[in-house]
Length: 246
Image: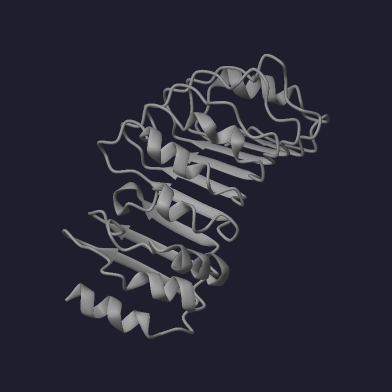
């Protein structure tokens, strides 16, 4: 039945936003790709319990060329089971996709090497989010290679203990409910303007090398340690906006 539903969507070429929550073992059967390539779809929210893109992506060089020139998708939210994070797929979207939010299932501890390499193909990414990784041990090591990334959020990944090197272009960083992180990187990107930390009470201090002079807003008001808040209060009057109160 879901295939019939997707086929119906494939004819809606004027559709600009689509949200799909697909249960059970499913395959795209080539239905989504025409919509992505020839329609006006710019924003897609996709949740599935199986490798939806397993055998459906364009494979011939001519098809790939058409897709890369015609796709308008710039905002994608999906989970790790859909199979999107694979080189044959990510290589089709490097010039268009600017926002990518990835949610994890409860058992994933880390991305595979192939998945990390596929993520690095999304060279136009400006906004990236990781969420709901209950057992996720670490973030991809190659994040610093996303040279256009401006915003990074890590939400509800309680097993992550540290952050990797961050892109030099990063302007906003949000860390929420990452209970195992005990410290921030010694040096944060010199372009960073906004830092928000929520419910990360294991973090007791700011980076050893301080915060960059580019900082405009520091928000640690909710669920953080007294030690961290005490350090942040010292920056009132130095950073334009400092929020430390509940």
